[in-house]
Length: 255
Image (cartoon, rainbow, N blue to C red; front, side):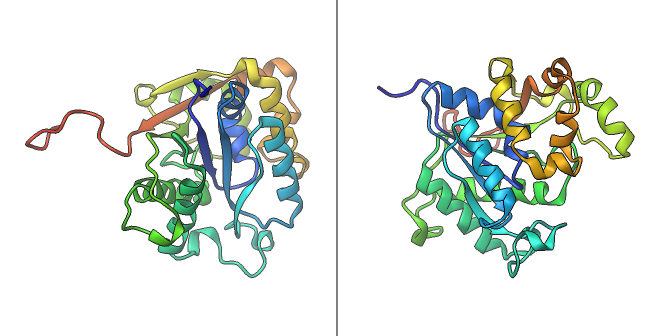
């Protein structure tokens, strides 16, 4: 019997992004029997962070890591001998992502928003751009014909935070001096309550022990009491971006 939940492929920049930004949705879909997977753009497969990613995905039910193995733009030793993710040739990186989409054949793809999420990290922004290109290209038979049969996902969702989320996150990020990149609340297409999967999501975040130890976002979560973790992680927000038109054909350009 086919799962009522659509299959979902998440594409994120770094190990831990998947758990922080879409861990609840990944766990929700997996628990309903849907196929789920995660593509991670940076870090080599023989690093401790890859091992941590594998554990997080096991917790979320998202299968094996699918790592592109590029270097984190701020951590050269993350993939020795490989170019930074932001510096890799565009056609090469789009082809890598098209291959993943055509291999997994998801109904939905999830990635970073245009800001790259709250932090605006350049690897996040680049992943957003490359994923948009790849989702459109994956369905066109004459683009990248050597990386699999065409497959067009039905929808692309961008993981984001609305301005109203500043009330939850602001007190924790303000001391770091970082600017928070949020979108107007009316841009949100889906507000997903993931509290039933909060335990899984939190465990997946904390599985990224390297980031916990260095005080990055998983470390922030680790230091919080359970109720506060729920306030930060219990809701996920997404902007829907349709890769193909869903309305009837028309004879002029319409707003």
